[in-house]
Length: 560
Image (tube, rainbow, N blue to C red; front, side, top):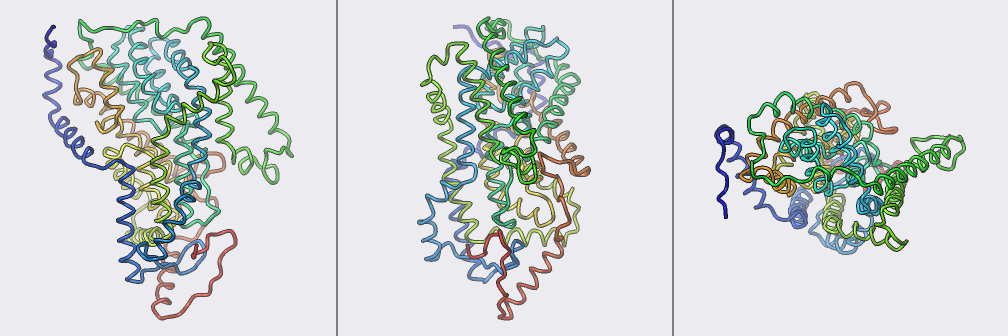
C-alpha cells in the first residue's frame, strides 16, 4: 500500500493563504450539523408560532387587512379553536398545499426524460461539441440547463466537466470546479422550467394570499424571462472569472498517479445519436403543434379575449412541461432500448416519484406550518408592521432588497434546502414587500439569487461533498478548504453580477415572466396609506367601535 502523495509547494501555499476559510468552513459545518432535520425544524417552528400567537392574542394585537379592509386580530393556536383547526385540517392542508400536485406531475415527466438517458445525452453533446475556446462557457451554461434533472445534474455533469476540459487539453480539476459551481451557485437560474419553479411558485402563492386574498397566484413561469437572462449572464461570469483568476492558479495539475477516466465517455454511440435526433424531432413537432393550436384568436387554449398571458395554456403549464419531457424521454428510450414496452414508462415515473419521497414528506410539515401561520393571522401582523417600519425608516427599496439578499444568503449557508428556506421566509417577506408595492414574483426572483449564490461554498450541501469526491479522483489530498478556495471567487462574482442584473431589471421594469411585471402594473395604495389605515383601524378597535364588514368579492374573508 503506497502512502498518500505529500502536498506540493503550491498546494501548501494555497492552504496557508486560506486558514480563515478552513476555520469558517469548520464552524459552519458544526453549526449546520447541530440543526434538526428540516421536517422537525418546521414542527419546532410551529410550536414557537403557537406560543407567540398566544402572547399576541392575549395582548389583543390586531391590524387592518389590506385585502378587505377588515380588522384582523391574532388568534391563539393554543386555544380550543386552534387545536380543533390543527386536527381537522391536517389532511386538507397537505392535499391542497400549492406545490404538491404540480411538483408530482412535473417530476413524472422529468423522470422519464432523465431515466431514459435523454438528459445525460443532451449534457454530453452540449459539452463535447465545442471548440477549446468555448469549453468553459459550454460547461457553465450546461450547468444552468442541467437543473431540470434536479440532483442528477451533479452526478452527470460534474464528472463530465472534468472530461470535457481534459478533451481540449485543460485541467480536469478546473472542469470539475466550473461544472459544480455553475450547478450549485446558479441552481435557480435555468432557462428551462424545472421542478423548483413549481415548488417556489406554490410557496409564493400561499404567502401572497396573506395580503392579496384568494385571487393571488404566482405561475411557475413567473420568473422565466429573468431566469433565461440570468443563465446566460452567469455562464459569462464563470467564463470570465475562470480565465482571469482560476486558470492562473499554480495548483491545477492532477496527481501523477491519478486514475483518469476515458475521454470516450463523452461520445454518444450511433444508436444514442439516432435516438437523440428522433427525440429532438419529436420535441420540435410537439412545439410546432402547440404554436399552431395557439394561433387562432378563438383557440380553446387562449384566455378571455384571446389572451395568451391569462390562458388555460399557462394555467396548465406544469402539465405541458411534464408532457414534453415525457415525450422526448419515451422517444429516446425507445430508440436506445431502455423503454421496451409501455409498462416501462409508468415504472420510470414511479422511480422519479420515489426519489422525491423525502421532499413530499417535508411538504407535509411545511403545509401544516403555513396553515397555522395563516390561521393565527401572525402573517398579517408581521407584514403590516414590517411595512410600517419600512415606511418610517425612509430606506429606498434597493437598500431593502440588498438587506434581504444578504440575510437570505447567510441563511442559505446553513439551510441548503431551497424549498425549506423559502417556506420559512416567504410568509414574511412576500406580504411585507407586497405592502410596499413589490410584486410577489419580484420577491421570489430576489430569493433565487440568495438561494443559489452561497451554495457552492457551504459544506452543509451534500453535493459539496459529492463534488469533493470527484475532485479527489484527480487530487487525493484535496479537502473542504481546497474546493472552497476554488469555488469562492466564482460564487462571489456570480452573486454580485446576478444582483446587479436584478437591480437593473427592477429599475427598467422589465417583465420577469409572461405577463408578470417586475413592478406593479398600475398604481396601488402606498405603504404610508396602508399603514395609516392600519393605525385608524387599531384606534377604532381600542375605542370599542366595530368596523362594518364589507369584504371585497373574490378576496379572502378575515374569518377564514
